[in-house]
Image (tube, rainbow, N blue to C red; front, side):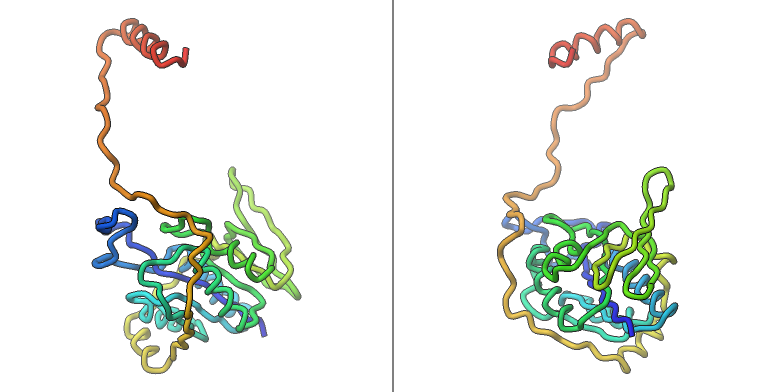
Length: 255
C-alpha cells in the first residue's frame, strides 16, 4: 500500500487588509484571517487523486492555527485517511526551517513512500517547505509539479516549462514533490459532509515541544510602501519629448 503524506499549512488571506504588529517586524495576527495555502490545497487534491487511481493511504499534517481543525476535517471529507495536527508554539508563525524540521520528524514516523506539499506559500521568506523537508529526510526533491503518476518503485512527475513544453521525470521513492497544480482543480465538498467528518474522523495531535530558532531570515522592519517623488509628466511634441528624455538619461548616467 502506497503511503502518501501531505504537508499543509494555513497562510494569511491576502484579500484581507493586512496590519503590521506594534514591533514593526511582523504581521498583526490578532484579527488576521487564515486559509489553506493554495498550492497545499492542490497537493491534497493530487494525493487524493493518486489514492483513487491506485489505492493507498493519505495522511495530512498541519501545524496548529486558528481554523486548522476545520481545514483538516475538510481534507477528510475529500478522501484523506489520517489527520495530524502539530501542537506547539505556532502562534507567531515560525520560520520555514523550524517548520520543516517539525514536519520532517512527524512525517518520518509515518514512513511515507511519497511526500507532497505546495511548491510555495505567500508567507515564505526563507525558502519553501518542500526542499527543506527533503533535506531533513535525505530524500530527492522535485518542484513545480503539475501531474503525478505512481509506478512500481517510483513516480512519473510532470512539470510545465515556458512555451507550453511538458517535461516528464522518473523519480525514485521515497521522495518529496512540490506541487504547483493538481491534475484536476481542488474539489469542493459540502458543509454537511465536513460536519459528518467532524463526528466520525479524529485528529491526532503531535506535540512539538521546541521549535528551532535558527536558519530563518531575521526581519528587521516591515512597513507599507512609502510615498516617494511623484512622476514627472513630459509635455510637448514628439521632438521636444525625445530631447527631454535624452537630457534626463544623460543626467542619471545611462547615456
